Length: 163
Image (cartoon, rainbow, N blue to C red):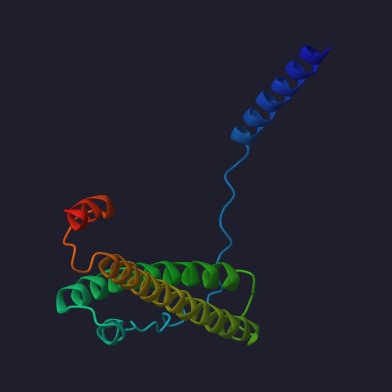
């Protein structure tokens, strides 16, 4: 009985797939004639260099991490701008004429996308700085335990002290 249900389901899926191929492609909703694309989002790049210097990082580490942070921000900007543009175009297609309603929703979207971008950038900045602090603490702990011993283990130091 189970195989009969499976055959029916398979046949039904085949039929639906064939029917979908027979239907004309759905055309995307057209934008109102008066539609003017809103200006792109104003998403500024933040700087992490000063924070890294304050943590005592070398110039080379500051340059490397600042570059990584800038690349991440650039990719975030591209993603947020693309998603915002796509969303506003889809939203504009739902308004038959520009009666002021679209501008209201577009403004809300602009605020939301901008805030989300800056929140994401701040979270990224905070995570990078936390990783740097954690790495510095690990190095400090490791170097405290090895004072005066070079790279000798505890066992070697004990043998040398007894000698």
